Image (tube, rainbow, N blue to C red; front, side, top):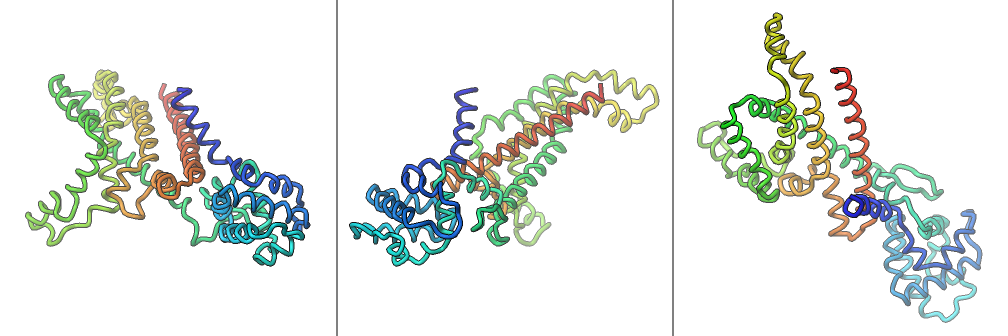
Length: 375
């Protein structure tokens, strides 16, 4: 648990806020700007130190990394540092460096760039976590919301919760009668259906997801059957949308709902329901007041397992969903594979971890309270 669970999580937490590579690239500038009060423009000594670090960063070929990191915080920093480093490399001694830098690029005369540079050269940073929540720093170093057109991640997080909750409800509605059937069936029938249910675990997730593409596509099994029976005159749009995501994820996660329910239902004595019937309760009343409350531990465990796993799903929505159906895990993979921005990927992963832990505590507490009341 320590090596394969806690250590990776701690490393992810550290990567989401770690900014030490910036101080290593421009160490003297980091110290000099730490003493700047942030009012107006820094003095000539700070300009000279920054110019020296820029020349060193260009020589060490780290100026591009610094520019990309600062450009994430304020657009235009990459071109500013690249141009300044290139021009400074041709000058042996820029002193006085303040007018030299202002001549190279007028942006050195804007306070907002110096505020961003000071913030970016600290050992730790909050910009990735803020960005994951559609927040950012303004020119006065205050946390504000990003413009509405740039806001992405809150809607993605909301969509992830919504899809996960919908899949959990679908799994419960389908899994409850299946689990009841397994719990009350004869051993021979129960064993046969249990093997069919466990086939899901013996098949690759990728294969199961791709099979739904074949089933739901325009000329797939479902559309061909519907058109063959004359129910529809043209193929229904059932793939690469939210409907396909619900179907595929429910199919994959259904066993995680059925098995906890089945294990609880097997332990419920049938005499309780018969006693309720003998006392005059209708079948619905006996089920609702006697049988269902005893299945709450199974419902809670199954719903928690399905919901938490659904929160982190990536392959299924990526293959059968559309652009508006992607979840948080898709963007984590995007920043790792496409942008090679591990800090942003870690920040999104941290948000997902906090969300999962919070919901686990809330849901677990609610289920425990329900069980206490039932007892």
